[in-house]
Length: 115
Picture 1 (cartoon, rainbow, N blue to C red):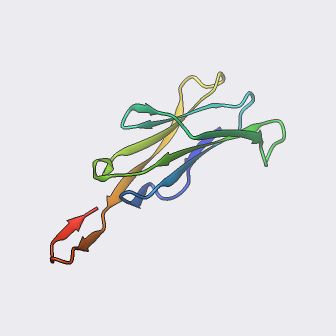
Picture 2 (picture 1 turned 135 degrees about the vertical axis):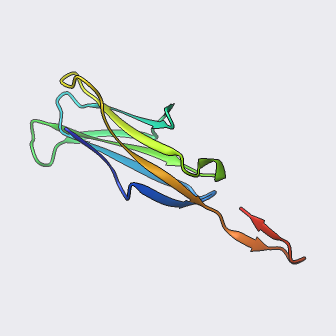
């Protein structure tokens, strides 16, 4: 069984824009349990889908998606995807760190603001 999060180990996201983090767990029967955490705190995935493995019809793959709308407090936060299964003695996991970027804009009066 293996776990991966789509994208790079460090993702650059724009503050205030929604993003889907996608975790894929390959192999297992029964289907593995998949969960998300943000700096150790449980998060509810938007969707968990299980289907037959593309590489072995005896196994199942699970995809868990988590929608995040980052703000500046999310900068350098770690999102972890973890898989559990009765055949494993310990959970397997992978993680991604979020780099939150903000946009700057100027008002008509010349003041600069972060969003």
